[in-house]
Length: 331
Image 1 (spheres, rainbow, N blue to C red):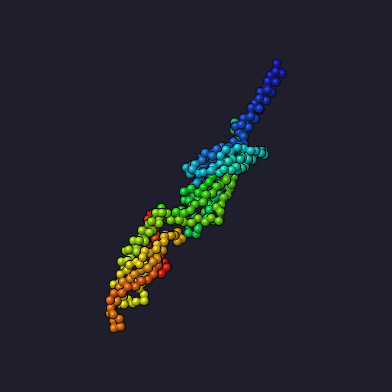
Image 2 (cartoon, rainbow, N blue to C red):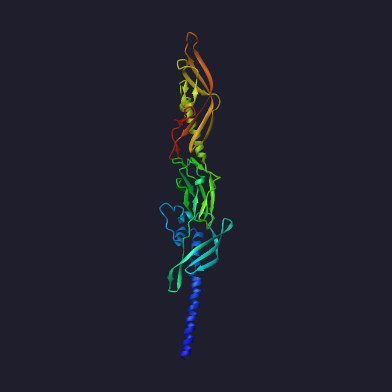
């Protein structure tokens, strides 16, 4: 009877040991936190991924690490599968292969035991898993104050942001006040799973571009300036417009009336992030010449070429009063 009881006890212990081993491998294995992390990444759950990775962010570091932003990021890793698990006591290395951006990427996670569950089972957690850093410094022009990553603004003073794996669109933020008037070209950057650092190629420097609205606004403001300031002037020289009747002196040309000979050329563009217009053409000045002892008086006409620039400050998405150049230079 005692022998039977002893055998029964051994059998029970053996069954418990086997069951414990199976549960440990299935429910409490080192790859469990890794697969949970990868599922959060695939589903765009940034907050869960950060919590599983044990990441604590500083203020301002997590602008791109929200569920709202990350759920819209393209090319997040998918179809992740564990390829190997190497245990070393209370730590393990879990290697994974995932599909991303049309290719296959690999990464290795370090996990460690952080105590016990249900007395028997190790509680595995991710250990020192990095959050990738994306640097765009090499793509920023000197005049840029801010840049956008997937529409989220960041200061150009640093030029680095923390991201999770995926493909991001990088562009310049419009200069302050020029929203809707100025945009920029864009660069797409893929941050691979397993990468801790990614940099935009130094061969591509972002540049500002005028929007169609910006071009139309500058052309309209230039036409208004020509009409209200240049063609309405009566002086023999209009410095703001590059108009002059030189070499006549002020007492030799009076009541000057200005007109264009042909249609002026207007080229709208950007200069270090400021909206500008270059205007050139030919003027026809009609003026009164006083009679003198050596010259008969009357009406005279003079045709001259001209050229000048306007610069437009922007505020609240609209152009302000133009700033004319003085002989090609601004004060």
